[in-house]
Length: 339
Image (cartoon, one colour):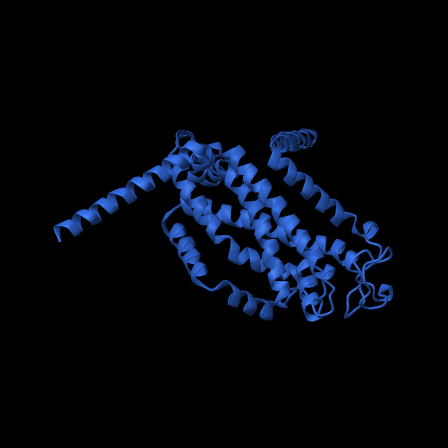
């Protein structure tokens, strides 16, 4: 028993050290430092929301006069329709937005990677079934499907997470499958097959780690996209009516006539929260992509354009345009002379 516990402890210690080294590499990047700082700030706000928020927006007894402007007591004023403290709603909304975004991003990475690895490595009927399922889900309009599922299954935010995962894994699984088709012909995979390793062992220990850069990048970028999607659903009235999120704050502001009564702070506050979260996770996703796959950055056409974009390059472009214009004018004059 002690040997088993020691082996488990060494396993988690090794993984912890690897994660810590990876975070240090992200922190060394300027954009990564910005993203990690903003994400850490949002996590602290979400965890310590009861101590940061001056009021509990879920407690009806703590609601005061409706439509108050910003003051020292209510930093962002109160809502027009219910009298809730907007700053407290903003703080508590960080919890729901982060939970929905991060949970959906992680689950999408898990489901997409597992099905993508199975389709690429096992092949045959498994590959055909998974890829045909991907084709079907990709052609179904997303918004009508979400409306139907939320009306059938409910609008609890955990149900919304499952809906996002059910329709969001398709693109990642197809990308993972393409990468696995290359990895399955590598020498170390062939050596593992010749040594008698099972398919499950090869997929988990040899192929799945080779897709880690895509999974980490996808998790960060998917989390950002899901936060925007959740805000959009809540704004349309398809979110959890009992949970306070940034999207629900925007929906309440629109239905409560915030613009009509000049309560612009009610709209600006959740908008800034959504922007901060999406910007932070996208910064981390882009930095992770550059760290784990630096060739992708250097082979990018946009990267090459910006690398070579200087005054002489722009001058050459305009000179070539002038040359083409002169050639065109000469051709026109020659054609007119022949006429």
